[in-house]
Structures are given as C-alpha cells and as structure tokens.
Length: 338
Ligand code: TRP
Image (tube, rainbow, N blue to C red; front, side):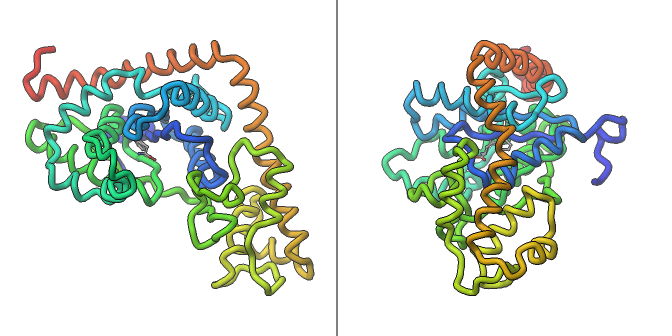
C-alpha cells in the first residue's frame, strides 16, 4: 500500500465500511465482505457501521427496521469485530453524518449524482418512490467515509462508483475550500470469493432473490444448509474440477476453498472419482462449521439487548469524537459559526 499522510505520521491506515440493515446477510456477503472486515480489523484502524440512515430510502416498516438495525449490529460483533479495538457503531447515532451530508450536497453536482447507475436502477425498480434521499444516497455515503478521513474503503463492485463520487466530492471541496478530507481509495481484498446463486450460478448470490434455495443466510440452520446445497444447480459431467462453463461446480469449489483454506488443486484431488452428491454434502458441512461460531455468538448477543445497545452507544461516542473534528473543520471552512 502506498504511503499516505496518516502512515507517514506512523499511524495505521484507517479502513471504513458500512453495511445496510436490510435482511440477514448471505453466505456471499460473509465470505465476500464480512470475513475480510474481521481480517482487516487485525491490521488497520477500522471503523464499521450499520448504515441505518441509508435504509430509510426504501421506507422500511419502523418496528422491522428497529429490529434489523439491532440484528445487523449483533452480526458485526458476532463475526468477531472487537468493539474495544475497532469502532463499531450505528450511523444514525452519530449526528455528524447527516450534518456533513448536507454540506456535501452543496458540493455535489446534480449531473454527477444523476449518473449513478444504482440510482438509475433503483428508480426504475421503484418507480413509485423515487425520493430525494435515494438521489443523494451517495453523498451520505461520502460523508460516512470522509468524516473518519478513511484511507481505504472495502467495497464490492456495485459500490465502486459511489466510492469514486466520494473521492470527487472530497477533491472538489478540498480544491475550493482548502485541504479538509483524505481522499479514500478502494480496498480490493486479496482473498474472498464472489459467491454465486446456488440456483443460477451465473448470477451473484443475493438476499433479495425470490427463490429461497438460491442463497444461504448467515443464520440458516444446518438442516437447511444441507438441503440447499443438495439442490444446488451443477452440470452433468460428474467431475469435480474448476473449468469454464462449470459455473455451479466452480462456485461450490470457491465456497469450499474459502471455508477450508484448500486451493482448487487440493479440492480436485480430494474429490477425484467421487460424485457431486458427496461433494455437495462436504461443502455444506464446511459451511456449517464456518458459520457455527457466528451463529452461536449471534444468539448470545441477541439474548442480551442491553449489552448490544450499550456497546453501540459506546461505539457511537468513540465515532463521534473523530467525526466531530472533521465536521468542525468543514463547517469552519465553509463559513458556518462553530
Ligand atoms: N451503500 C453501501 C451498500 O449498500 C453501504 C454504505 C453506506 C457504505 N455507507 C458506506 C459502504 C460507506 C462503504 C462506505 O453496500
């Protein structure tokens, strides 16, 4: 990684990411993102948040949202993020996010926000509710990132454009008002798989897939996990090997590799002469083992809501201390009284 200003001062780079409190993450979210959060949390100064303000754009039912925010926070702790060593909090509990977002709205061009593919896609999908929040969603995301002077932001392909606009907004603000924000860079994980749907392995595994057999939830029971893997779509070659055109098997091999640490050659050897039935059960078992500690932690945390709420509050206080400094700077630079 290149030498950024914060590294020169001998500080660790700051890594920031957020996750929306929609339904329970999938195995894809876990292997592709959350598991890497845990790894990064050991190396960097990490800031992780539940992006609950972003979730408001789709008008979730309030009681359901409240529950999902808590569950997502519990999941962050359950995957092993240590609230003592990292900053783990709920976005809406730190008011600087909404405040900086407003200032940044005024430094974002209508044209550039209109070009966001996610906005265009979402507006098409929800033509009855194209609200302004949906439009300025990337500006709030920019505020999330810039408040903590993040050096790196681990994001999937679907959020790359949002990270680019965050950089553009930061660069514009810095240029007009003077050096204020660190320009964030995308963090591309060295490991971690892109997990595909079990029913259509040409598509990414998605929590919004209408076919429940297509995705594994982080909280699926062992029985359900076995059933879903048994019905995973494969091919008719009956040979466990990684090859073009074998999307279903390639996907299962990727999942197995992520959970066991074995590489593809080793996996091919292990299943030489064996059928897909055996392989699918082995993959399911590896996933069950991988998720077991997360699930155990999750039920422990969810049975102690007071602890969760208290930990979130403390996390928000730590976040607030950093965010307030950046907000102060930005307000001063634009001429607001402080
Ligand atoms: N928009 C992101 C998503 O849906 C979530 C998010 C909100 C985020 N704020 C962020 C991701 C800041 C990275 C950094 O996945």
